[in-house]
Amino acid sequence: MLTLALDTATAAVSVAVVEAEAETGLRVLASRAGIEARRHAELLAPALAEVLAEAGVPPGRIDRIVVGVGPGPFTGLRVGLVSAHALSDAWSVPLVGVCSLDALAHRALLEGSGPDVLVLTDARRREVYLAAYRGGVRVAGPSVRAPAGLLAELGWSGRVVGEGARRYPEQFPLAGPPWLPEAGDLVGALHAGAVSLPARPLYLRCPDAAVPGEAKAVLR
Image (tube, rainbow, N blue to C red; front, side, top):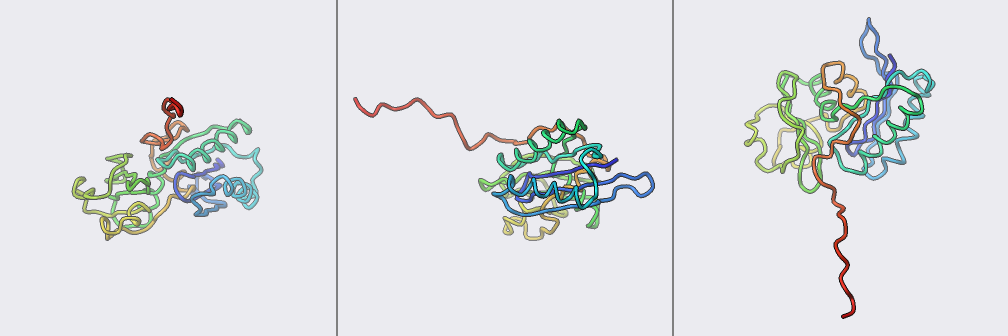
């Protein structure tokens, strides 16, 4: 099975073509990742074209699309999800959503020692998105919280990874990489048992924009 994976839930724009083989498991045929928090829309389309060309996979051979559903900021997250839906419709292939924190946890568990990890990504507004994993299974989150006192509140003394932790070193002094999710790890997490989700954005909180109130009279 050939899978096109993409994630724009963080400052990173990540795309990968992954092949699932019965004998060897998952194999990343091509991948691209760029960190440009305000240029998701500009970077995603060229990255998609590049990974398909490098992998030697025409669009008609893609069997499935996997997209990171966040949690993440509104604008960037929408770019990936809208693109995934458009490609799924155009190519008539299934579309699967995966929590982006699950992808980061999957990479951390592959690279680190021990089965427990706390994943934190930047939620802005001086908050973090979080999910905690014990024995490789998510036991808390995803949720959005203030970083101050979070470790004590969770009773957490294990590994901490993710850009949310790096942004607040005073709260998470022992945090380490990986910092950002990669698209290929969405597929890895899915095959490792992560829950597949509808391809809808996981925002966790209300947007900054609000409906304007009643106009005030200028002249009386």
